[in-house]
Image 1 (cartoon, one colour):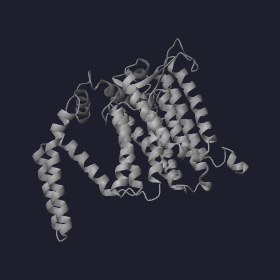
Image 2 (cartoon, one colour):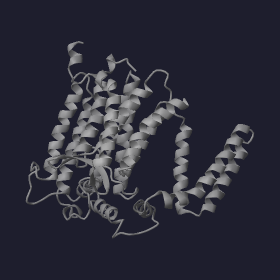
Image 3 (cartoon, one colour):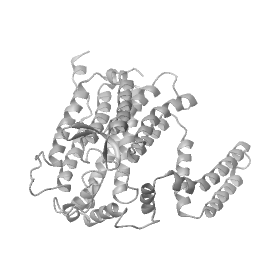
Image 4 (tube, one colour):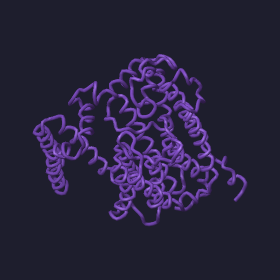
Length: 423
């Protein structure tokens, strides 16, 4: 190995590192604004969340540097071990975990520090999924390979669901995009999209109206493509299954979801209006974001933020601090940085020579994309409150460290891409 390859600076994508640093700094300042205390003004006061976040950021940089110093083959070889360890931690947390906000998702490490295994399960799952799918003779289109890949994703999902942490469980569903990139039929995604549309429609509209629309669409498709017998057979089967699904929606909704989950969905869909109860958080968040207007009220000048009208403002609702104090302009900058980061990750994934690195890169993009979309949509009232952090910006050590590991593993794989030919 030559000196260039020995140096962790060799071929590192520093543009991505700079975006990462920018988001971390933005997060630190917004956490300071969200929980600002006149008696603890210094951002380096370690008795406050913003002081602790500074420690988390520094330690995250150390973790990122260590990852860049590792041998790339080490990451692939130990993917099963990482996965097994995180699965065991997810089992431990169900038995001896610390309950926070109704979720038994934390392991108390002492000294006021808690570890959230579900955050680290994300990168471990991406690694094992990449290792499996990059193996010889493994194709997503093969039923056996698809089931094994699905099992790798579903195992941590089910354990996290038992905590119960609906937000983190939903994030794992984004890995379907990785399977699509590796050959899963687009029709699979279309079916998922149609089922989601039918589910929401059945809650908002009379079932018989939906059936009339489905039959009308089927009749139109038969008129256009009726000469193809296979198409006609598939269309009839699909129509029967769709109608059956529509009739099952409300029983599934009322008996498959818990009351607190239903009321949150009802609030978002406009079926109920409880601004002093379940809808309070989102309503206050929207007020905060809207009050920022174009340029914002100014740093530490947000009234919604200053008087703690929005609960969990340093974690789940950190984006409303951005909206209130930085305004529309600041919000666009933050969302632009995320867009740039995601495009950069996809570009990095596509230039990989090793299938393992490419697949892992798409896993990173999928998870970060899901977190950003859900968190911001939740803050502006377009999704139910399910409690997931905004990557690199929300307060929390487990969140920041896990996203750092997730991203810097990709940067390490990319830095050695010219010398990596293994699967």
